[in-house]
Length: 156
Image (cartoon, rainbow, N blue to C red):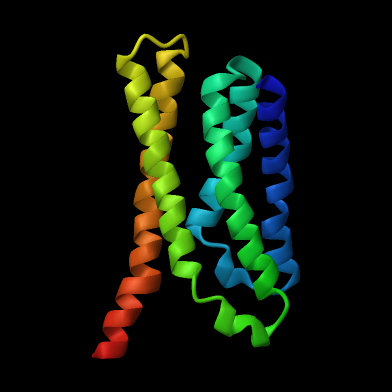
């Protein structure tokens, strides 16, 4: 479990390349506060997790996150093939919903651990819970801006 958590930490370092690619492709509009906050903090969060509490509880978070990233990078990979792929990329909205579901599951898991007999330190559970709540707020804002506000403006 600890080794799997280390690989999750390593993947967060690799994911920082997203920002580099956005810059190289001259797509600064994709470097949002959510992007910088999430990528900037995840590396530190996983470092702390691997250093102090690698194993079962952290593995759950990494497992969910890795599953979501499989779909996310599949989407990005298909999108990178060019405009002719657009008809097949209708599911971007659902990718954001999947990310939100992941964050809700992690929040529920951390909350449950605060009240259950669990050896995972309460301080880490509280930190994970607060962090995921901040991400839920940011992802909900992104969802609203990207999918609900735009739809309302088109109707008007």
